[in-house]
Image (cartoon, rainbow, N blue to C red; front, side, top):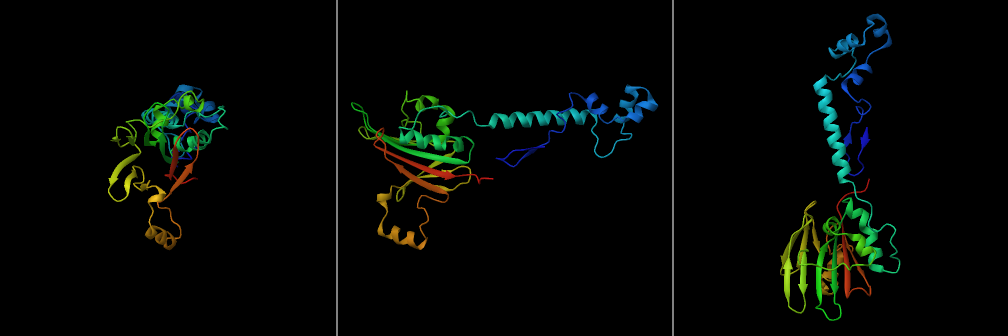
Length: 253
């Protein structure tokens, strides 16, 4: 019996040891059966008809159907397993941003964590840009080895949750598989996690008012960024500003 730690689903692998239905029948034949019958095929036929079977016994169609279901379940499970970490073996100790990114990679890949990254960046000779990035979406579609090996820089795109060009003042907003964008006149951008439907508030801390501070004391410091969400600001020379919003989506076992 196999237990998937992430989903809590069980896959019965008790039929794995049988290559075919004949091997399954042979396992139910007793030595005394062969002694009296003296014919393996006859013994198999009697077992297949349900004679001398104890407990649940599978007929050929049931056996083959269950074997197929198990193989498909295992195949699906394996396809959902996280790939080898892109950060593995990369020398990133000198980069605060890449170190923070690597510390989240495994949990984001396996779905325990949903992380939104806010990046503000300006390269000499180019426009200043900023945006909110769904890390899980990028991990699925980008080659992060290039980022961890420092041959490419992770930057917001027009296809991300949000993208803003500070010079042209062009703004783009998109939903992702993991987040729905909710423009809000009072709070700014909000993001709803599609899995647990909880709201992630990415309002910058300097927007908090005196009323917010009073409310914070009443709620005993409960995060203004939403339930199960933590905000982590980091300082790094690679970017003008970087903020990680980490939303816990799956309870650890």
